Image (cartoon, rainbow, N blue to C red; front, side):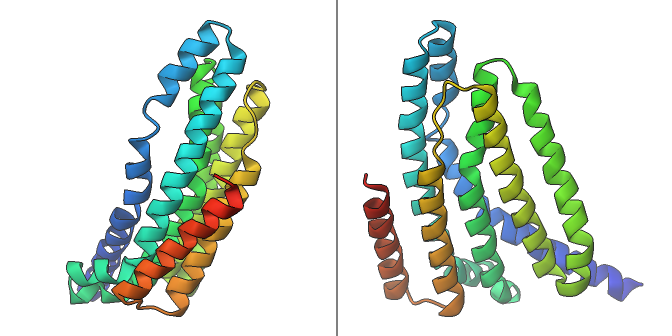
Length: 227
């Protein structure tokens, strides 16, 4: 029993380490989105719906640029990050890459909650949260048995991405004054998925390779999105 408990604690510690590193992606981008809600609230209250749509669009363009840059940076630097944490975390580089990609792809969907709050319909965001929990529980049980810690990370990532997409869909359907950013979202997701594949396939990337991969990804995203 003691051995099982110690093994569970070790896996829990590794899971927390993966999440803490990957969470830097949404935490950093939150600094750039703090002004969105008051700006939207003011323009919607003034019935300036064109202005509200423009504010949302500008903020989303900033968000996609920042979050793509941040998630790609975390992915290419995942192995050096584990080296700082110590030898017992050396095997977590791949999981950090997967979780950082999931947070990077899913995070723009969180703006859906801001849109709903700006029109006083924030209670609808609860359904996306419930979906997130249900998906995670349903995926966790079979994936944990099959892949243990990797299964838990995959379950969390899939549930996060799907619930975030649903949240944004609910927001855009409820508040029809805001434009869809699906095209930009798909381009950002494609670039991040590409970086995740490169970081996993050629892991560990050296600092020079990591810098070139990140720079190449950002140039590609800027070109695809036509910033």
